[in-house]
Image 1 (cartoon, rainbow, N blue to C red):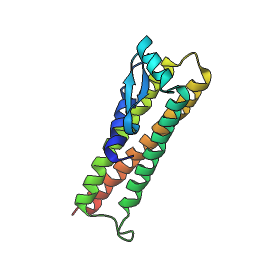
Image 2 (cartoon, rainbow, N blue to C red):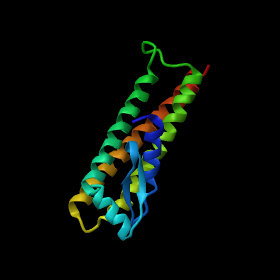
Image 3 (cartoon, rainbow, N blue to C red):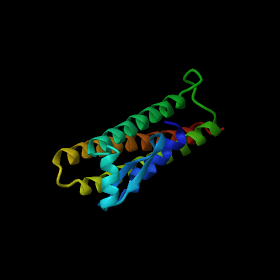
Length: 156
């Protein structure tokens, strides 16, 4: 998934209101699918059930984990000597955006849990995924704090 598609899908998951579901568009893009007979029929015919939604969100969580790991690794690029002030600030900005998006995603999954409240299995799966996003968000916030402290100590 490219960077733009990843960020867009995070925003979509974050924006799902209670009562709505995730729809699957072309190229792996997600969209908010509202309630109603036609939307339900379209999702049914497109095989866009709860299992696919959970699998798609799990894939998004894996992509977020990989991006955060890359950010954490790049913090110590250049043989462990750290990065330049400009690079640290850029990395800090990206990490801050990711932390905010992950926290928002966790809240969006709470809305999906309300939507699927009658399906205990789906609710439990979404709850686990939401906690995963929350943990990654906390890790991203930790990276932001570390980069901020590093910039104060070693600012160029």
